[in-house]
Image 1 (cartoon, rainbow, N blue to C red):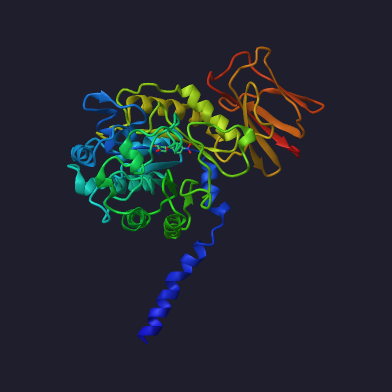
Image 2 (cartoon, rainbow, N blue to C red; image 1 turned 120 degrees about the vertical axis):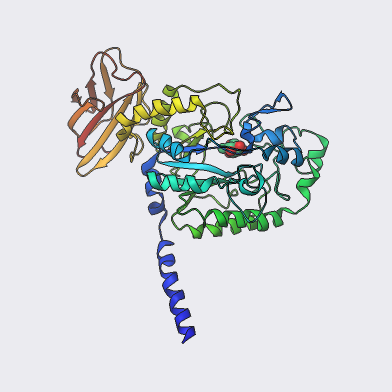
Length: 459
Ligand code: JFZ
């Protein structure tokens, strides 16, 4: 009898799992392709030194300070005890992302310094057990995302870990921040020790680190925080296929989850590519889903003195450019050690939000331009029941008041300025569409012309 009950419960428990695991890639990717725009958050104890150690500015990206400064495990972990983000307000963070028009958030649950922003049984090197703050940072963020209908993803540095023994360490960075094995190695010790600079980093093997830290932590992340939309792996330094397979298999804990291409190359391609700090050229695209991640200034993790912010115009046009090529944009914020977004980032998010409120329709759920790029701007498109909607985002307002689009087929149903609904005149001669615009641009950053077309675009 007991046996029958056991088996029946097992079967009942397994049915939903079996069903959901059959989600196709298209089904899993549907919300992501619709979303187009997300927020990356690089946050950790490196935000406390904020780019400075012993009164000296350390070059490179802020979250790499321990590596770049060759800070000992002891000194770094000692510093981290003071991490106390008393101003952390995850609800405000999520609202800022949402108001900017972002549909998902990916946060560093553990970066290369190995510090976990969550309670973990696998290591004491985490916010609850190690810092004066003493509270899990991801739980309330997951709850806020749930409340606001924003998807939550976790970045997890699966291979590099500079504090948990056995984790790997990349040696030297290129300009772009990617470890380059051919570059000059920083000093003799790191050369002899696979990039490590402190014997404390080597008291356990990499295989054991995977089994005792990475695997249990990823299991915790995929079990204790509700729905996890994305697992964003990073820098496969020292990864083996065996380690990657163990981590990959954990993804079944979240049947709808999406992953990137950074678990291990080339056998674990994931669901999407991750061009970094750059927008691919059309010629580089091969039909694989992709997401450009980018900083607002020159660093991912907070650096107090990096004021080199891109303008809202640049970032809004980047988003449009990316959408016109069929990709997603993951735009980074590096919060301070107190738990606040930098004022400059808040301002940028607000400006993007203003544009998105009016023009978001030209971004969400769109696919790539049928014509590639235009000198004067970009195009996105959506299929409708009996035709196509085209969105022309104009960056450079034409002097002669006319936009022309060659290789155009189909019949125009309507054409108007998206911002005001004011109609614009169109004419088609042969296969050239001409749109007559008002004399000045309604929006200096990007004005969107919405054109509804019946029939086949043949493109
Ligand atoms: C990695 C991290 O090292 C960095 O700290 C940050 O988190 C960033 C988002 O990702 O840096 C990389 C990883 C991959 C490439 C470049 C930088 N890459 O593939 O060119």
